[in-house]
Length: 378
Ligand code: PLP
Image (cartoon, rainbow, N blue to C red):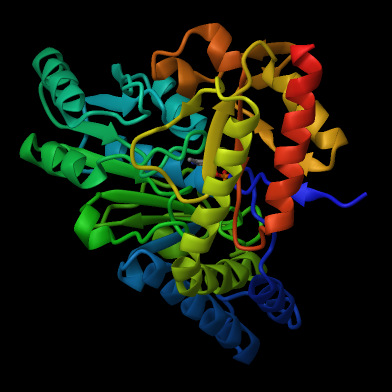
């Protein structure tokens, strides 16, 4: 059966440039710490990739710390903010952050203040400011604010530059998870002015298991893993050179592909129009500024899992916003943080497109959704 992969926000297909870089980097023994020619060659490969990743977000190459992915990068940023010279006293996090920010925050031992999003999926700077003030009255000293650049479920783009200004005006720091935004919209670290920015290769056409933390300033290392002094003491362990090389190549390809994102946006808009033509009552979530590739939509009265399975049977791969763990399906924390009732949150699914999506994918998705809706309506 022909199939359509519309789950790029979960993981994007590997770009050909990334595959080629991965295979090339694995050709020879490659430990960048070795002094001999093989080691020097490996170091050169890592340096090129560091530059490519930095270029994607307009940062300096020396600020890039390679990690095992977005999850580790977010955990490392929290740790630097808590253990470094800043010594933050509280954490102010948006309620729509990824679990790799929310969970380490809740386990940090510091007071955590969560800020809800509006019904459009956007966190307001006024709400962040009010919460930051409350946090600093109760726990005097710097805080760490965490606000992602774009949400993984709704695609809603957040006012990160304003949040960074707010954080700095209150002698605090800002962590920006740019995992979903990078490669889909232009990202400029100097303009965002975030203290920490995190990335993940597999969301932009690189392999899983590699990501990066990019810092605005120099930080005393507070590594999650101790061992060798790799990555300037920030992240011990022999570098995942193949992954790093592929991340660099994917970042370069994603950067040159940014212009093509308007074509992806047209496909997404056509998809949205097609679904709404079939079921005009279907609610669309994330109606403010949104990533060009993402559509979060609910089918009234039909649980998300049913939709995902029916679409899968029709050859269309999408995700449910709700997470299933230990047999218990919980509604998406992102949608509930936007004030959605639990039932509506349980009925939302996410379509996410990308560099290889086609008209045919969109047509197949509209057809599968329409047939499911007609069946359910009966
Ligand atoms: N942050 C966001 C917004 C994400 O969507 C994800 C992955 O789903 C992550 C962080 C974690 O990245 P990784 O899968 O590389 O650990």
